[in-house]
Length: 364
Image 1 (cartoon, rainbow, N blue to C red):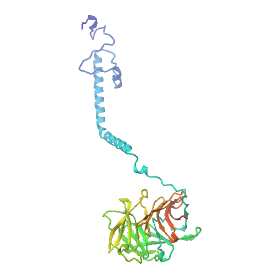
Image 2 (spheres, one colour; image 1 turned 45 degrees about the vertical axis):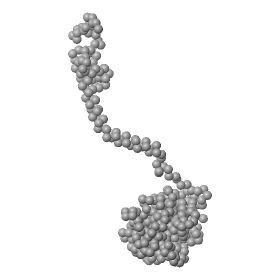
Image 3 (spheres, helix red, strand yellow; image 1 turned 90 degrees about the vertical axis):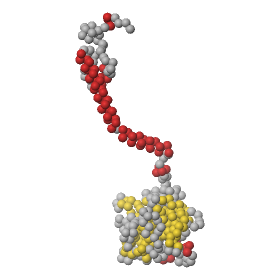
Image 4 (cartoon, rainbow, N blue to C red; image 1 turned 30 degrees about the vertical axis):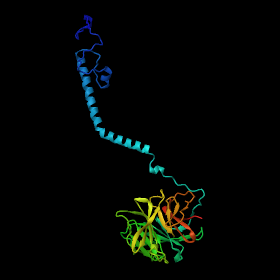
């Protein structure tokens, strides 16, 4: 390249062009806009001895700013990694399909189902029973027992007419102590039979209370064979028939474990020990605690929506009792067969004045 005297300029010369800069190739070169963006107040367009200092200052401030930004980014690396993991998990779940909760159908009343008939019962205050026990036909009493998991109960006569009002007799079970909450029960020819959430069995002899107390004691049957640490969420008991002669017709229990909510395991008592008798499938979406009750050789499974599924334990055809079609929001807890083949349902309904309260429901 050839240079002419016109191309050579001295920094102290008066003929220095306005846009002329001196720079060092070993240092970065920045535009005026970048320098202003980083807070450099010096006028870089003025070329003199001070302009070199301004340029160097701009580069120094920019490097310091970059170093500080890098430190801040490094501090955010763990949080960014967590966000990436969550985003990846969300993407995987969307590819796999909707969650199980989203797939659960919402039960709707069958348009062919009958409307509910709520019996007029004067219940005790602050009473929220979860178990419904129908009296055995052999004692000749058309009554039911409603029980809470803590052992507070009420005896209620079944009304013969829709407009008949009945009163509940309140009682408390004695002898539960540290046996745990009641997971299931049955009203047998000898009295009440209780199964607690930890698998203990108790018997409360007789068919009524005395001055509001119903004494209970440990059952004569062997302990139930449930795994240690397990919890029963539902259970029921079927007694030995009076005319039974064979060992195969011993007492029968149905148990639903919290960790296996879709199976009701059957055990029969033979020669003083419980032996597996089979399993009954519990339909999905029955609720966190389905209601269980025996009706002859059939097992009744009550959904929280009000549906009652009938499952044979020997031979027979499965049955189904539709939920009430009145559209009222209730939490159904249990069901049992009363006299004359009448299915009774126990439900809880919330009212604005008294909170949650029980309802005894029949359907024509």
